[in-house]
Amino acid sequence: MAKQRFSPVAIPDKVKVNLSNSLFKVQGPLGSLEMNISSKVIVDIKDNEIFIKNRENSKESSSQQGTTRSLIRNMVNGVVKEFEKTLIIQGTGYRAQLGGSNLQLFLGYSKPKTVTLPKQIKCELKVIKSAEKGDLTYITIKGISKQLVGDVAAEIKKTRKPDPYKHKGVRYAKEFIRKKVGKRAVAQA
Image (cartoon, rainbow, N blue to C red):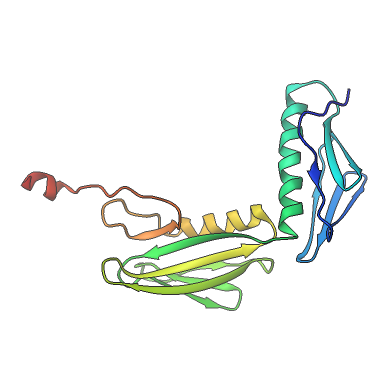
């Protein structure tokens, strides 16, 4: 019982899509990605559009349909335009350094934390001097796989979570951390 609930995913001009058995492949100007399709959904490619339908009328099949559509849309968008996430390192003496496929993070520990970057991921570092916040190091993670970019960014952030009292640590660029007032400041008030 094939049922179409979502709008189809449009295929851009420079993108080639292939479906063989349950392996879905996308090739574009920036690279290629592949994914296994769930047995609960049907994927049809017609007239530069990808249709994702339910194979059966169940809650699990319906949820797989939405997830599969999102993953396919992200794959098609990723091979045309890279995904990116930006992180900020803030704190006195905190910095980052690239060395081959490793990113070394100096975050106030006795030894630097090392994050190994997959070869599909590109990393850029930028240091901005600020009088009120000290040196801010911006880490930009880029890649064609949205999931891989998010995973690497989360692994980097996990090395030193942001402190709400001193605002030190690693955070996402668009993340807002409300500064908390310490015990001493409350006692003096």
